[in-house]
Amino acid sequence: MTEELNHGQTPAIHGSRIDAYVDRYAARATGMVASEIRALFAVASRPEVVSLAGGMPYVTALPLDMVGELVSDLVTRRGPVALQYGSGQGDPHLREQICEVMRLEGINAGADDVVVTVGSQQALDLITRIFIDPGDVVLAEGPSYVGALGTFAAYEAKVVHIAMDDQGIVPESLAQTIYALETAGAPIKFLYTIPTFHNPGGVTLNVARRQQVLDICQRAGVLIVEDNPYGLLGFDGEPMRALRADNPDGVVYLGSFSKTLAPGFRVGWALAPHAIRDKLVLAMESAVLSHSSFTQLAVGQYLATQPWREQIKSFRELYRERRDALLDALEVLMPPEVTWTRPAGGFFVWASLPEGLDSKAILPRAVAERVAFVPGTGFFTDGSGARNMRLSYCYPEPDRIREGVRRLAGVIEQEIQLRDTFGTGSTRGHAGVDTPGPDLA
Ligand SMILES: Cc1ncc(COP(=O)(O)O)c(C=O)c1O
Image (cartoon, helix red, strand yellow):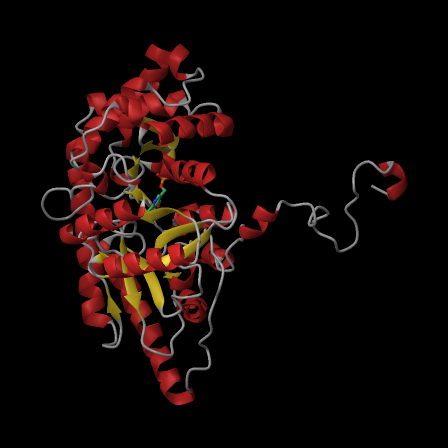
């Protein structure tokens, strides 16, 4: 279209200016950045590449025929309800069922305090939307879940990382950071934490520290947002008691059926104190009017008619076998200078490379050797993580995991040799939040 034909109404796209509206975006859109490693992951999803990168649950292990029957039956029997708009807070019966699920983690709550959301990712978005003004502080473990960091960036929050070790968040680091921020007059809106089977850390906050974290936040009046999509996927013993179980007024709990059933339903939830719940419902309605009645009823029907506890047990066994395959292969094959966490549940191992190696620089070479991982920098907002990588074991079969580690160990071995020969030239810092995309979440 030429300028003349345009009648001055619609800005024309011409020349090399790819985005005609580049200077019209809201300031918050500048915080939304596509990952520079996204393109590489398109290659990494080829079948010959062993992907230790993706965070996709192994839904193939579900009895898919049963799911098909359930969905078809739902439309036949309850079509007029399932295909209609629903309430902003979510289906009341499903909310009751969600309370039953949460009881497994010691949570005693009423359906009235639950808001059903489009995955727990939407709950994160809504919480951030109702609490964050640009520049407000969110505390989060370092490293933290990349999808949460993307949401915080989109609302222009300032993320301050709290140190984490193999027992989870370090209480002293939390207390000191809160003190320093308070002294500086910076408003802390909430602590975002994944206490159980952390993504990407693979670690779990121990029992003693749980109480300390609750106490520190309560004393400082800092709300806790407890994100717990993996809590029921522990490999040993009973589920951990949720933080929310011991402080109903100070914790917003986020849950999800993505890992215990299937992410395709996009059903998650937030459990919040009354006043926060009211705001969440209003924010939900302004975002999407209501969640899909269809998928909510499907999940409700699944919980009512299928042995869901048994299904979770069988997922746990499947993921335990894969975790073992990954840890054993790392033990046998990795150069001795590489270290990693030992998850007791969930999907992820967090590995640390020796001094002078840079995981983002290594990734293209690893993909050339047909193995992929997620570099550590995407899990921080301050450029940390260059020597880290997230390895996930949820999706590939055990033999593929072993083969993937064999390839990766070879690449790292070579990198160590290069470093020893030429020094540490490839090391560099990477600021900014990467968003590798949903399949890598
Ligand atoms: C820690 C964490 N929180 C939230 C989510 C979002 O999950 P969903 O929106 O599928 O419930 C994920 C997904 O991987 C996650 O790992």
